[in-house]
Length: 309
Image (cartoon, rainbow, N blue to C red; front, side):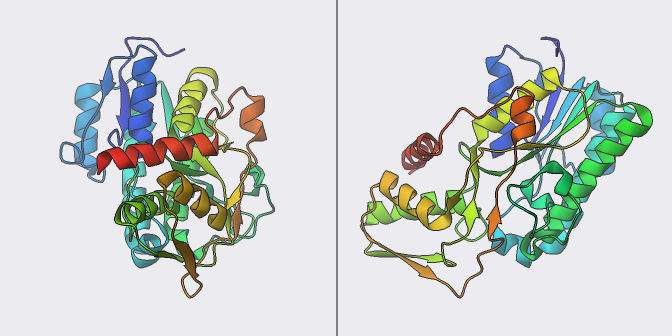
């Protein structure tokens, strides 16, 4: 168990996953949480990260900070997605290890798995085939981060866990229409379309690909649970357990936002990987399960975005 007075460094505390982890740990009575903005600590800067660890000496570290984005951002800036995530991970992981952090949590993504992996995707399918080209740079970085944690654990007995969530959404998401992920992009588009009473919304792709979505608060619950209860370095999938087509998701979000216009699809735009459903049975057997249904999560997220306008 993590001591209540322990220093817990949550990297990326203002992002969607990091802020959810902060809320979860604070709700459980942890008050000594270390937080640094990008302006205060650039995780890409090796010397700055070393100085931070020298001064603060955190007991536990959760690496939720990363350079993230949707299909267009990944395709356009693949070099940056690979390099910047490698820099962040290497600096934080190695300083955590060198400063004898008691336990380290690495957060990855379902994109680490091969694009043609059998469905649902089991942990053992990692590195059994080529990656999805539209986010290969990001995926390679996340695979490298996981493997570094795994090797440090196996070679030196360092206590790490690595969690691979499916597609996430929820509080503090990035609602960028160009570089954002599909869920927040749809929320923004349909809320604004409803407010402006637009007659039609044209969306990317065919709407046929299937995706699995998990509310970020469920991920934070998984981080808290496994930080408290597991000490095995092998990857663990964290997913909702079922998927939905992008077309069905769009219709659900449009309905929740109060949009009644026409929804059209531009098939000249890329769909990305056709299906990406995680097999999270291992996590479920170990004691964690999601609590927030997709319909409830959509309602919460749409309501939150409406309030931000």
